Every structure is written in structure tokens, then in C-alpha cells.
Length: 178
Image (tube, rainbow, N blue to C red; front, side, top):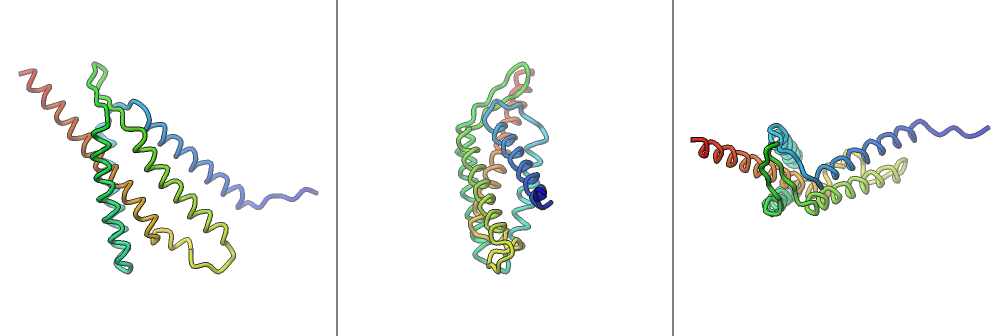
């Protein structure tokens, strides 16, 4: 009789497949020509600062983590400004479009993806062993925090830049109509 795989294997494979699909769809969206959305930048501007605030609140027990979060956010903000300079903005009859720098978004996302895969591998590889790295410590790793906060700073800055561009285009259209 053949051995039946443990159900946790199927759960792990399912979660892994879902994670890979989300990563693929995120990377695909970052590479190409995108239509401006009135809602997506606002979601980014609200969600990421809330997450960063919660991480900062959690870091009171570990002051180095607060410093790492602030440093990562500052680096991400600088990268967001640079990414906006590399973005191609277009106003067409079909609406407003932009093409972000593929290299910048992909590099930051792969950095976070790689870190998450590494941390998950460590947790699963050390399962059943006494380890200093527990799943609850996932958000307390300074390297993970700096990568996440850099990505958050980048996305928030980029979203603000998109909204500023949109406002400028709308304002210019109103001026031309008068």
C-alpha cells in the first residue's frame, strides 16, 4: 500500500501556489502599461502607513526595530521619488496611463519575496526543533522589517506621486477649457 502524504503537505503546497500566483500577478502589473485608478493609490496611502504604524507600535519592546523601520521607510521614500522620475506618464483619449520602472518595482518585490521565502523555509526546516526563530518572531526580524518598510515607503511615495500627477492633469484640463 502506498504511503498517503500528510494533509499539511497539501496545505503547504496550496499556500505556496497561492503565494506564487499573487507574486506573478503583482510582478506582471508592475512591468506594463497601466491605466490610472482613482482608488488604488488611496488604498496604498491608507493601508501601508497603518501597517507601518502597527509595526512601530510593536517595536517599543525592541527600539532597534523602530530605527530599522524608519530607516527602511526613508530609503523607500527616496526610491519612490526616483521611481516616479523613471515613470512614463501618458494622457490619451482612453484615459490616463503610466508605465512604471519595471526594474525598481520588481527588484523591491523580489527582495521581499526572497526574504519571506527564506523566513518560511527556516520556520519549516526547524519545525519540531528548539529554535530561537519562532513563527511569532517573524515581524521582529530587523532585516524583514527594513525590507518591508522600504517597500511600503516606496509604494506610498509612488501613490502620492500618481495622485499629484492626476491632480495636475485635471487642473491643466480645466484651465484649457476656460
